[in-house]
Length: 510
Image (tube, rainbow, N blue to C red; front, side):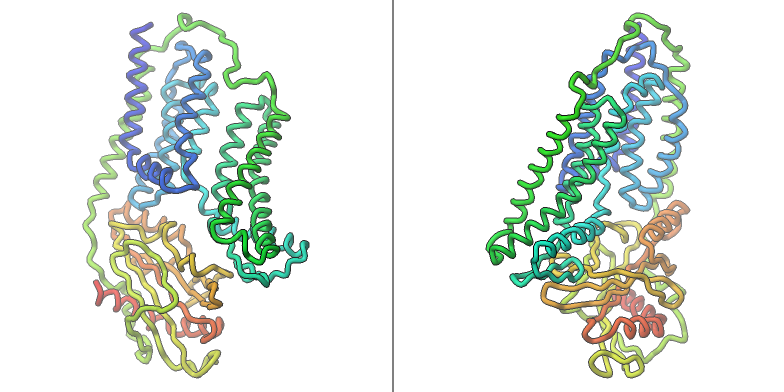
């Protein structure tokens, strides 16, 4: 038996080592996010706790149940493809999902169905190591504001809402990204799953507590924002501003977490333990599987990993393309009256990091026919950022349409330009400035308004070994100079000339 267990241990170490080597990039990038981002600091504890839960159930694990399974090979094959797709397309979220979905499946492959069933929660809990959730921030900002404003109105606080800005007679508040409550929400969800697992044996109780751990932090964050604004109103902005609201927030979240624990303790199963279970056989009894059945699953997995890595190496060695203007922008019938020049934009700038080429400029032209706000001319500012597709990412959650410390989004909607959908964002600053932003992506000259579709198309081209360069185009104007209708109409009528001038500017700066 000892010899068989030694061989099994060697197989398990080999499988986990293969996971580490194949998914190394996903592990490292995820770990960097865990350390840097306050939202995902809790992920550092996920793998250690999963190991602890497995250790607590060690008396239920019997060597006769160690029967490696071929079934996980099917989802693992899909995950290996997703990992290639994510690596080539620089889609970190897919890479992280593949990385931490593969680990529990590999363990399942090695230990078999019976033991995997016993370890179901520790293996599932590994998925919380995936740094995902910050995509909810804009929605949480809106939801928090939607709940806080009526509460302030019920408290007879004079308030005017302008997007995410809340104006009261004493001053102005911004429901910024830090006020969305995303960090507390994600931590609360993880805590809810963990506490439900260690405290309740009933599936019904677990589901109810997890639901409470989702709803409570959302409501609590809205009440926190309400309290901050109310405090600022009652103290004439002497309190609840600057660092005060962050301190109040930390104390408030601690209280809410304590309340969740009190609720859980009141209804928990007092005699329940995650290590509960009956041992049905001893470690020395049972029939061990043959060596063929022991090694065949891991051999097939390693073979698939070798093929995947060879494919990834082959399509990764693509030279950085030389910038060229796409054919769709080289049109002969462009409006030559459009006047374009490179220049900085005084009060607004987008943040697209590590681009290969980035150009800002301005377009000026007569606007007599489209009724501007002030006079017969207006300025449209332009921004275009080019990424070759072999270095930094064109599409990344780190990029911003505007400086979030100075501007906030009031609204966002779709518009049609030259029969193609684009996004029109309306932003406002704390100084009372307002701007319209028309923006979209182009991959090899092909138009995309959807971030997801543009990213997937880039990855698709890379998988085929083709160039996947692209640009982000932003056109913006001051709403005091040009109405929304006039802005959209002008861009629609002159989109060919605008694209030609933008791509020409990129070529001059390449």
